Image (cartoon, rainbow, N blue to C red):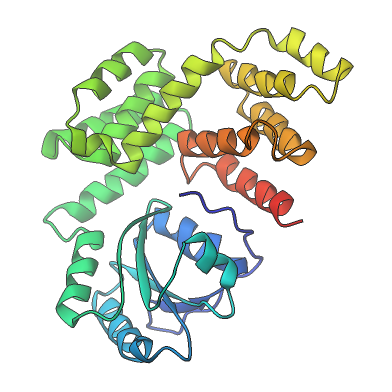
Length: 306
């Protein structure tokens, strides 16, 4: 599920000594999606008229604060923020979702016992021995990869996999490093050897999407010819779509995003919404923490809600 809500200019304040904050539509990207790249975020969707919410809400706050920063809690009033409730397909409250890496990974609906809330926090916080060290190493490896240090990132991912061979974040990171190094066939071979459960993990799905996009982009054609076609016939949506993929094939991610956004602006319904669908694939391939993903999401959101 992709979240295409505008980020705000200033996040809601968190009380001193608390890991709980109220948020809204304008700050959802910053308070939940971007924050969950660093630490798991549990989101409580509630309303003032909801009786069970009055019991579950304080329980969540107590347990999250007791976790001492291993997770954060963000509270969303669905009456004041119907856009988010609609996007999350929330049909009843209280509804609780846990986010990690910019994506929902766990949750429940309705009032549940305190023991079940504790289990959720333990699952998303990763309270196994060494989990904190692995998480820190993952963050460092991702930072190195973004800086272009493919070799350094690969070394860190390898160190994590030595201790935890099925760590999805490290597996996905190492596969991205292989693709970046021009070893797409090796990455595909590793993917094909992974167990089914790992293949369902969002990080691994994103790598598979990257490989699929690369294969599709390789068939797009010449950027020069396609750009000439678009300049001659601005309404040729297929040519603009192909141009976006040709740009992606050449590594010009910004141009690929720009062309798809322009196509969406011109005709969002063309080819059953192909421009938006392809943008969502690109966001998944780039990863939620990529600056281009974050800026393009906001641009797409502006077009959608204009």
